[in-house]
Amino acid sequence: MMTALVNETTYRVLYVENDPQMASTFYQAFRETASITVVNSLEEALFCLEADHDIDLVVFNDRLNSTSFLNAIRDNPKAEKLATILLTAQPAIDISAEPYRGRVIDVFQYGYSEAAFQTRLSYLKRKKQYTESGANIHKSAPVRMPFGKRLFDIVVSFTLLLLISPILLVVAILVKLDSKGPIFYGSKRVGMGYKVFNMYKFRTMRTDADQMLASMASQNMYNKQKVEEPADQLCEACRQAGTACQRPLFLDDKQVCEEIHFRNEKAKAMFSKFKEDPRVTRLGKFLRNTSIDELPQFYNILRGDMSFVGNRPLPPYEAEKLTAAGYARRFAAPAGLTGLWQVTKRGGAAVSDQERIQLDVLYAKKFSFKTDLMIVIRTLKAVWQKENV
Image 1 (cartoon, one colour):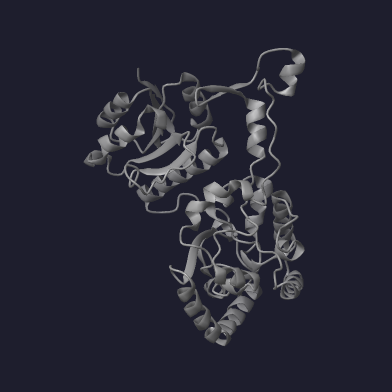
Image 2 (spheres, helix red, strand yellow):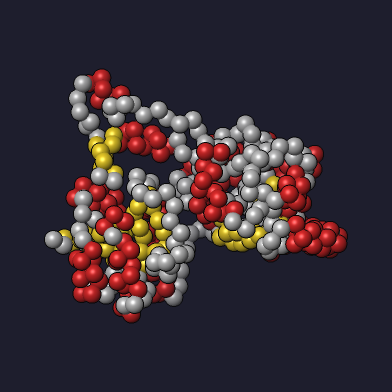
């Protein structure tokens, strides 16, 4: 049976789920962001899409045969602009492969963070509003780099690029000879004011490095100690009271304690960094230890994407975890080639992700020409990195 759960928002979501508890939880969590229609089978989902052409997003539980659903809508011109998010138990899905390619825009594992899903959903809604209006719906207060800092960046980065151009040419040739793949590696980064840009480095990793990341989670230096789950799956409060679980969640048809679930979620690392990273090439290890791989970022500095000193720009998947007020303050400072965190805890062997955030926030509050000069001097002393991270 199809149930429509509607609010006043204009972003339309079709949620395909046959578990009433999961459907209710999803609606309660995201009803303020989107207008949600819930169906409980593949057939009802296809019928709903045929009857209602204004659906913007389908959230599909993988166990309800997502492959058949994606194949069914692939050749339907009415679903040409329809996006799909999969909920799945699979540890990894390649959305560039069939039948996901061109239809599935994201994958969330069961037990996903509601905050992370909310970030994704809000972005999609804003994107639709922007496309329909042809203008930016909401303009936040601009975050600007101080004029003196920007002028310094332009003059120094341009001068350095001219001086080191022979070195850049030699390194480019060596990278090409050392391993297959492009000379430069450009990746999306989030900088000052949540600006997204391509940050450039000399390539130091294998071309399949991103695909290897999921299998290396246990080697992450930022991972916290695994939280031991009690055998009876009860939190301390329920165990002492001698009652059944008073805060149950139903994930993948399995009841779990909400307290234990969120405690495990908090134990997951916000950042990724590895010691003796197996993805790094032979030449890449030398380039990283000498920081030569960072030299192309002088171009980012000249463009205005970054500054010489600031908070390290983050990949989008890390930046989306830092949207709380206490964390977001770090994005009020310029993105930097080096910064307070790097010179305080060079290599990161003893730094936790919370300490790193606190250092970033501290820089955003206190940065000045004097602070930047101190960081530059300390960076020059620490250029040769002794640990292979």
